[in-house]
Image (cartoon, rainbow, N blue to C red; front, side, top):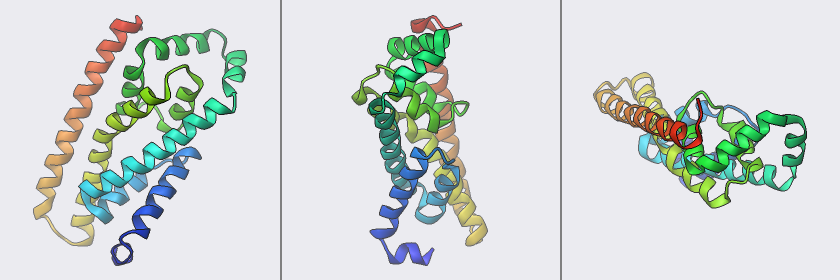
Length: 190
């Protein structure tokens, strides 16, 4: 960890770049989320993770939007594509928010999917950044707890990190329930 602290500008910038590329390339990023918490702590690790994820998500969205993959998806998707498109169109930011806080949806492919829809870039970006924060805090807190316990042998910070992680998890659950209810009501999803 001394290497990361010895390079206070280059290390975070490299982390953000690597994270963004992993998102674009559909590589799972959970190890980086946890690692950010271990290396930089919950607050700064979360900030770096949100920055890397949002840049990667935006890149994937724009790649899908500008490579005209939508026409291909419409040809092969048929009724399923039409249904997904209508849900995204009707629910707007709520559809993006629901996929960000729900661990069932793999975030990598979801970035490309929303690029194929008619959802606006601004709506997509704002909902992505806002609703990726709770899971990011949760995983960074878990990472910091693991680092404190395993690397440093500290147990004092463990209770603080469990509390932060618990609050982030509770926020995720509440947001998921709220958005699910809104999506079902607004988009007539059964």
